[in-house]
Image (cartoon, rainbow over all chains, first blue to last red):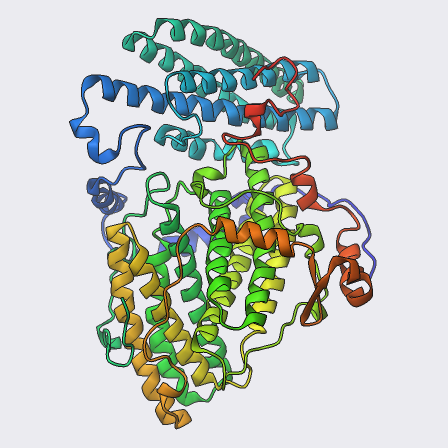
Length: 241
Length: 399
């Protein structure tokens, strides 16, 4: 049988309970007559989770210092390990950020530039800055005697936390506004991440690095302002206000 | 270290018990554990999955008398699989787990190919190895280009990332995927253990890709998983065809239990994580207990002595180390091999000798090849290709 080639018809959102009011009544009635099989509430789950938390298994070791050696590390070693961990986090984030903006570029290129929203040149500008930041961090880690290919614990956490952002950006069905909403999460985190890294560099006495990082933060602040503004314009346009 | 599998009785089946807390222990560390610990976990999960799969197939096809013993052993296997698989941590993303699966397919198959006493089967393993080797390269490119991830964080330098037999030419007609089976009456026991191990490993890879493929939003990732899952289905077809169909169901069950003993014993000998080693050690005993129970059934139902089919002591363990040189040599010598019926031929002869595969492949690739697209111009670079500034945003950025 030949496919009709027709586009799917979207007949409305069916997820809410009021999609079918009569069935909703039955749903509510069914749930209300059932009794839970055990007493208590969500705190029971917290107790179970606490057992695992208390076991104290970490995600893994920071660069240059094994988890088992952390307790014996002196101030300098501990400071450097935390700094490398956070550098690794920012590096991973900027690297992923470059890929996220590539996905946004792809979408904008396909859908066509539309006002409101970023132009291809706007995205190119931010993307190339993300790439520059990644390369800056890569050089910084090498110059500090580290290995920029290490996936540090904080980099690992950042990757887990960002997984959803990547899913939104690479989904061909998401709109420009939806993509910008996800990018906003990344940019807010990115700004806070650079601020923290600068604070850490200052406290550890890495003045030169701190200055370089200030420049990156200035870019990121600009990205944030732009993304916020494009998102807001897109949403207002959609709402026709 | 050897193990006399007739003398060692292991843990009796009724003493093989668990609790939910016991099943769900703290997972391993993606960052700190050795890559081969993950390789072993993935492999053993696959072997337990195969034990359950095979047991269900037997229960559906055999007489009622066998259903209870099958169900009893299967229940323990269910929980063994859980305890093993749940050792994988949640920060290991589906794509990272995929890299781990391909590392299993490369390093374990390489060890098997090197030790296999039957030259024809060794050739089959080398043939499949070069295809999984290519999958690793394609998935690494996907990880780099979709998520800015470095596959070597998972591989830990043990396994090369470079093209093998291109995935796009691995698509074959079923006529060219079946192989000749070993003869159960004359085959070395190691040959049987190998064939079962690799069949199980590939089958779980297929099932894993079929489960996670639709979880990706990116259409290229979805196509790539669709394409490579199709090859894993071919590989399962290829490897299971190595098993002798003349073996009785009980003979197959007994060999499967022996294969599990062999593999847990191999894992135990190489394991560097003491917590995981305790699990392998416990499960060697569990599998011995299961195997001895099946030995009794084999005697009763088939009226044969298990010593006719089982080795007195276990062969040398699976070699859990990098097989870089062997893989590279195989790549140099055999990358241009193609399948023709149950045999292998040079790619130049494929058009004449495997016309069905050519037609099938042309059809499947006629709207584009995801495995080629994902790795277009891709060379693995430590820290991702962005280190070399390879991005659409390269203009303005300097390495």
